[in-house]
Length: 263
Image (cartoon, rainbow, N blue to C red; front, side):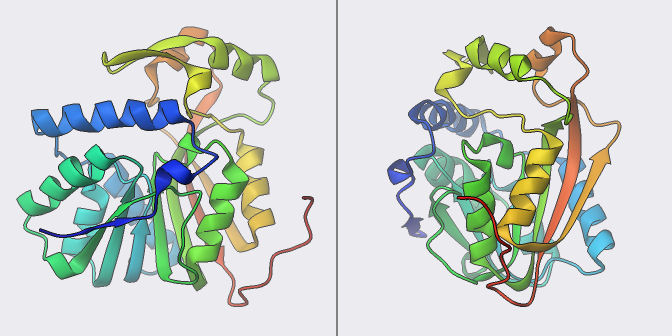
């Protein structure tokens, strides 16, 4: 049986305990029900990103917040990669859901690594040619820290490719305060107050600011149309504030090119 690499996600001071406990439940339920299906829309967005940058995914790859691992499975079977590290923050996610999904899809063991970890603490420097994040970054409690960690772990010239929801730049603070105080039912598994977990709909400008201050040389943000809003309870606010985006960040060839920034 393939060994799990443990990056100790519970030591991450930025991730709320409620977020990990919630995803433990979600991943356990999905593994019990055999929910190993892929997401064709997100795979289409990955292919779109490849066309934009003019190259296909290759080399060493890290997927953060990998869910059931379908994106990593897709590139392991359809791209000329060396290896993909598949990261999730829960033991159930890695040991049950992702592991079984890779076995069911008959991916060669030397093509992937199973990683229990946090995207706020990646202990590898200039290791990866690509980092993938599909529906993961908005679960960061500290977006700048997460983007900094991605920058650090990318080789010079490497790319982050992400698909995420975001809010408009003129979204007022009271919208986020309302969200924080709302108790929601998540997939019928648990009712939880939003402030006890990490489900943050950052403004577009916040993604751009974090990206440039991390040191990324090129930033491409494209709004995606005809994409269903991923979080249904947002619709209860009756405000057309949420969008979906494809975010592509390119690290320059000088690894210490981070601009001046506030601390």
